[in-house]
Length: 297
Length: 297
Image (cartoon, rainbow over all chains, first blue to last red):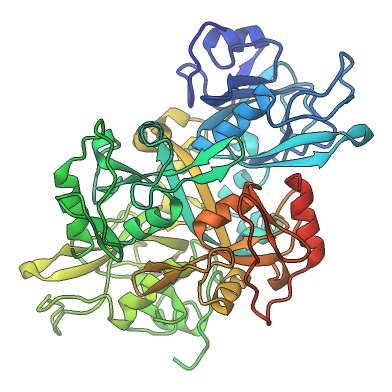
């Protein structure tokens, strides 16, 4: 376990690739352990999991997976006590959720799912942990459960029985399998980045506007807010001098342009107070000018 | 324009369908007007747009579209004054963003894009408005711009030159076209629903925990928080008695289980105060019990 913990895609491992053994995955850096299901730690998060055998109540719908955490079992994998959120493996999964980090998912042949490979192990791509909750498992003991959704860019057909058919033209078939999706509107997607996590570290998750932080399980939650937005047509950079550490409420107001930051680092618009700035955080003034321009300040 | 404004997918109009004329789209209820680009109003939002000709700076990348708002142009479509956010069409697009409503996008043959149909009009599917910002257009006048991302479930190949190839196995090709996506982690996806919007209306967007509301352009922002979560394994309902109106900060704390609601409607956990409840809002106590159970209260 002396190798560093790497998050995201690993060169040489492509979605859909089959591996003969966990040793092969380990040697490529996909998952650094050949026994444990979860590869991570409570501070950085979990970078990879292997689904193999798994908990009987787990559900694998391909693009959406329910996963049961670690602990509480004896040598025969029977639950003999409560699982805890403080368990290092479970805490690493919670950290991944809090930090918005992606997790590599591998399915083993013994994993009970229609998406499992027939032999060996298959890389299913990157997922995001979107829920952590508890449940009553065998013998009345508490179990820690996690919901993962696919968040890779490839969307190869290995995670979806329906997507591929829909690509071939039969839209109604796909839609009929996921009725709730078509009735649901998407409200808000917050994407974050490695650099965003560095900014949040710099401020210990305290919002630079209100100086509050959001308590979540095992820690605090904040968002990295890009000053000059990423993507077309703005082409802002994902760099330390272009990101603020904000709570979700002030992130929305900042992105929607009801607050902005003056070149003198005062909050302007609906809120008027000085912006909190860490002395190690150099903010690019040109980016502030850009944000002010696109929001009419 | 006497027909009601309908949001989301319309029966009889499938992604990829080609229409000879705007009249045909109008008769099917896809877009209720044969001249205007935007079909909507400032209160409910915009339900459909037609891209046809468009603004010269617009960018259509298929799954991501930049769209310029209405107003400020003379009969010859030359910009002769500032566009405004208060313009009814622009305000309708901002409302769609604030309310998280999907918008139907049609591309016309005259729309300058590699995704345009050769003749007539093509239904491109549902998109979400994720940004509203201003820019300097022709002759130095202000223009209102919007960024739309595809949020339909079909992902037919009409919006992506790359996705279809990737389905056929050449993953690296797709990834190489969208390098920023692979470096980005997804932090938080907030989905909302029609019922969620009714709950927000009931509270005028004031959070039931902190009694504050978030000021955004043309209005206020709140989120509909499901008490018993949707989807596997919870199978909560998208119903009025299962949704709270919360600000994003308290939505996160509620979903992550650092606050919950007692059967006596007191906030418990990290915050201890009574929950604000509108007398027209009947909350299902069983759902509160469920939320408490999965978060260890």
